[in-house]
Amino acid sequence: MPAKKGMRGWGRLRQLPSGRWQAGYVGPDGVLYRPRSTFGAKMDAEGWLAHERRRIDLGVWAPPGAEPEQAEAPTLEAYAAQWLSERNLKPRTRALYRDLLRLHILPVLGDAELPAITPAAVRSWHAGLGTKTPTRNAHAYGLLHAILSTAVDDELLDVNPCRIRGASKTKRARTITLLTPAELDELAAAMPDRLRCSVLLAAWCGLRWGETSELRRKDVSADRAVLHVHRAVVYRNGQFIVSTPKTTAGRRDVAIPPHVAGLIAEHLDEHVSRGKESLLFPSERGGHMGDYEYRKAFKKAAASIGHDGLRVHDLRHVGAVLAAQAGATTAELMLRLGHTTPAMSIRYQHVAAGRDAQIAARMSVLSRKDSGV
Image (cartoon, rainbow, N blue to C red; front, top):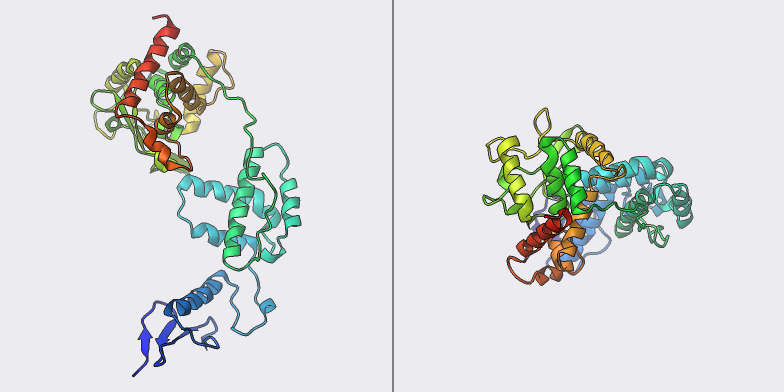
């Protein structure tokens, strides 16, 4: 019985008359290589080929039988570049990782071959980051840990040298500024007319800036009762990139508090073009508004009401507190704000259809009480 040959994109597989499998491949040097023994199962032969191909891709391949030290290990910079290219990341996350590598990791560790990155080297690098940017330090450490974990999986390292307890976590150092409903109205009133509703929607509906700036006429329901938060926009490398929200849970429909719905209707009539794709809060030049342009107006308005340190993202925190005061449960808050949790079943604690609308209505009651209406 003739041997069966496997058709593959790379490498060669052949089943021998004995039923065992023989594998082989042409190496970078143009020579055909086979292992010293055959394999009892096809998947084992495929695994051997996959391992050899991976070593070629990483630049650490050496002819079978060569001494391990003859194979040059990749530097962290080279390996990190490949690690990044192999991941399906959102533009904002990819840009963050590149910045972390360029500014915080590679200047110290980039030229080191992977086996040379010891726990002591990691501790020395981490100590050199200083204490002024704890959040950025935690992100940099977490990224390095993830990259080197993959290196362990690729059998380039025996163990991960990142062993600093708690280094990937950080405590929030900044106190978040919260506003009362009356202060929120004052802030909105201090904004340019065309941007007043951006403050109200961001706060009362718990939006991120990227979600607010991508809102379009089609995202507001006909009765002005529901806001469809299905996209977000980020500015990277000189262009605006529209994608899905930050997390899967971020794609959501949020009930608009009734006292805001009327203001949204007025905004649509006075400041938004008629097309369904028209942005609710475009730049003065047209198209998406950059956060730098928005922050200029926002900071001026915040200062005018005595809150110089207020950030745009604080509006989202304000919305979370107001929803909680209106009686939203933890699960309902997660759904309203688009948060994710390790236990996704918590989503099913949203007890009944229409509950979010009830929360929104109660939020309007809070506004009327605070304003003395």
